[in-house]
Image (cartoon, rainbow, N blue to C red; front, side, top):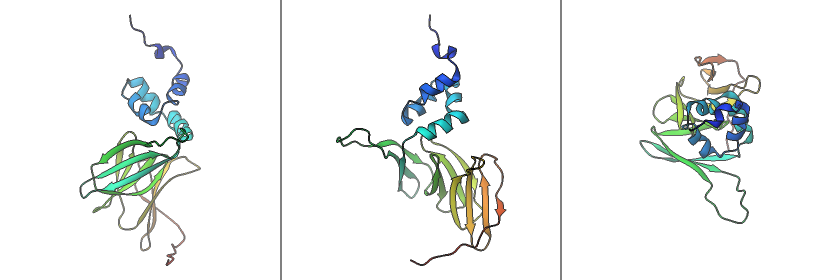
Length: 183
């Protein structure tokens, strides 16, 4: 007779156990069962995991039709032993460039059209956003609301912000005129 021992544990204890896993194993645990998937995708788990995650670096290898990304762990806890710190590799189906990153998410821009992708490199999940046009993009998290925001800056059309969690459209915001510094 099989019993699901995790079914009797409070969700806080299950989350504490799952938080001790590596990024690779956390992604695998999403496939175990729906209760684990729901725990791992919960806001509380994500916030807790981000605060405990080691610093990482994403390297892009562009190709005309796709991009290979490799995510590296920047901390090596094993002293004196060379180690490949690659956490995961994945192929993004569109030819893109990295425009920014925040809390483990990447802002990618399509090479030929104004299409943006917010991508989680661990889960390989992404959302598409149609960009407002030519210009520079940035990506960050609001300290006040905790929401992810994409910023678009164009000297002719000003500054526009897209708030990811609200699913809203681009809104224009007042900003200081950007200065270009010749180097």
